Amino acid sequence: MQHWLQLMWDSLGSLLWAGLVFTIPLTLITFVLGLLLGLLTAVTRLFGPRPLAAIARFYVWVIRGTPLLVQLFVIFYGLPSLGILLDAFPAAVIGFTLSVGAYTSEIIRAVISSVPKGQWEAAYSIGMSWRQAMNRTILPQAARVAVPPLSNTFISLVKDTSLAAAITVPELFQAAQRIVATTYEPLILYIQAALIYLVMSSFLSSLQVSLERRFARYGGALEEART
Image: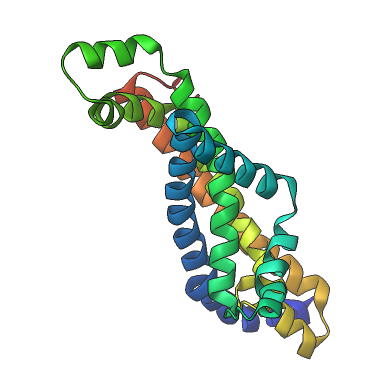
C-alpha cells in the first residue's frame, strides 16, 4: 500500500501537467469550435437552401453514426495515404470538433425549433429582420433551454479526450500509459487517472448546477434546481 501511495504521489505532477497542457486546452478549443460548427449546421438545416441542408444532414448522419475513435484514426492514420499529414494535436482538434459539432447541432436545432412561432411573429411585427430576430429574440431564449444538454456535452468531452491517447496526443491518459510502461503498475495508475477525470467532471457538474440556477432565476425558462 505504501508503495502505491508513493507511486501515485510521484506520478501526480506528470498527470496534472499533461491535463493542464493538453487535456484542458483540447477540451476548450474543440468545444468552442464545435459549438460554432453546431450552430452553423443547425441553422443551415432549419433555414438553409435544400442542397446545403442535405449536406448538413449527411455530415451529422456520418459523424453520429460512426465511433469517435474510428474518426480519429481516419484523420490521423488514414489521411496520410492521400498526402495529408497532420500532427497529433491538430488531428485531435479536427476530430473532436467534428464530433462536437454534429451532436451540438442536434441540441441547437431542437431548442431553436422549441421557441414558439409567436416569438418570430412578434419580432417581425416591430420591424426586425430575420437576423435581428434570431440574434435578439430566438437565440437568447434557445440558449437558456440549451444550457443543460450543452453542459453535459462539455463534461462528456472532457472524458472523451482520453481517446486522443490513441493517436499519440500526450494528454492525461497517455501520460498515465507512459508511466505504466516504466513502472508496470497499470491498476493504480489507471485508477489515479480515473480519479483525476472524476474530480474534473464533478467540478464541472457543480458549475453546471450553478449556471442552471442562474438562468432559472433571471431567464425564467429553466426549473429551479433542488437544493
